[in-house]
Length: 420
Length: 147
Image 1 (cartoon, rainbow over the protein chains, first blue to last red):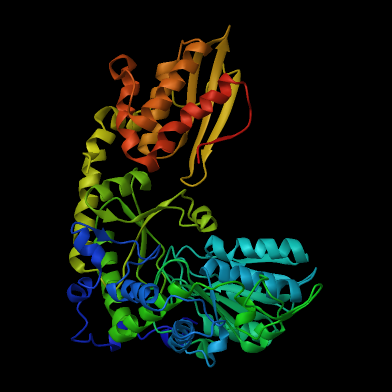
Image 2 (cartoon, chains in turn purple, red; image 1 turned 180 degrees about the horizontal axis):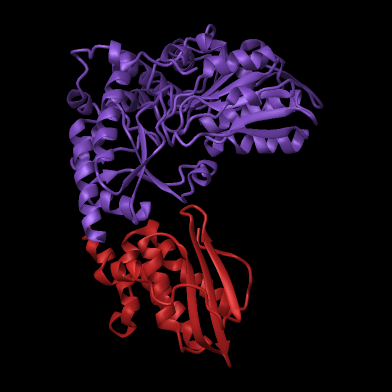
């Protein structure tokens, strides 16, 4: 397991060339935040990414030129809004290589997307004796919804453990005839670990289980192909991939979505409403009750355009380059512990500085304009496994540079001297 | 931007590295526990109360420098005080870390926390020990959280 072509992510930095047009310095000019905050060194894109002007312009354009509700108006700006909203769905579907755009459901977040699947699929298919299999590597958003579903259905919640390096430990041993769904992260938000999804899907399908992939950390940073991965559900968020907050996506195989009952009830998701009962709209609308996040979906569509224009292979190669650089530099600073050393990894580095609490480290880094995350990263089972209460985490994106990593390193040296 | 050394004064760094009244307390007859679940700060307070006076007080736990220094200074400040005096100190401290106001000159070491209010995310680090003390003053055994 673990070769890069198997994980639906790639390509590896060794066989890519950097597109001559891919220049972080020029890219930064698209992001107003870097001109309004010239001192800012933003190393927290795994929490939320910055937003290019193209995206904010497209949202403004909707509000200023064709703001109207979708799917229900006769007038022309309403048609235009519907077209823009549905075109965003098409763009997102193509971006993840979904066969049909009706597989793409807009939610408010990746969290809501996972909750939708856990509730609507879980309640229909799970009962006492069944097993829900997740991993110790999960973000709370891929743990808690399954706890809720387990409680309602009586199914058992099981965990695949992780190794010291931050990889799944003998995951294949945990998939059995009892397993009905495997919910696993594509890329860890703490270690950057890229999990062997394709192989997990094959094994899960062989016992008749379905697979949900939490792709919040992978879709923004690599080429993904849901058909190649073979997964049944695939959840991610807009604001981590240059889009606005308030929009997430659940991809689901059409046949699964069609047999599921609705998650939320309201307008838009119905065909007919009688006093006692109603009939459901077709997918994806069945799962989009109420006026949807029109502006946010349009913004996400523009973010997809922006990333396509940059080339995901270039984005990925650039981040691999920065990751290697950061790991090399940070591991050479005495007193710094790096957590996890997975074979396949995205642009995330978790670390601590000896005898200094991560919140103190992050406060001093902030004083030098450097934004990193400090805390448990919504992954308390991982913190427990590492035996720490919190870590610092630096994460990179297409707008980061090696110079910023150098400044992180020199700021860390300075902090050590203050606490020495 | 404020000078970060107003937050991390020498006194704070000193109490972080050499916390006072740190560790278990044999004579303890009143204990309380506090956590900041989001940070992972964790605190145990042990007090020896005699005739409404805090005769001795110790703390144990782990967390950031602001948390540790504030806990250490809290034990130093309240040791020997009556429950009523400690309650008044709690009120002063609360105003200090949320507004930066108060009679700083008269506060003694507690005054090093005057910079905290400028860092809203850190107020809970500084406050945990005092909120947990409040449980001892109120003789409550519920775990305190400042989240």
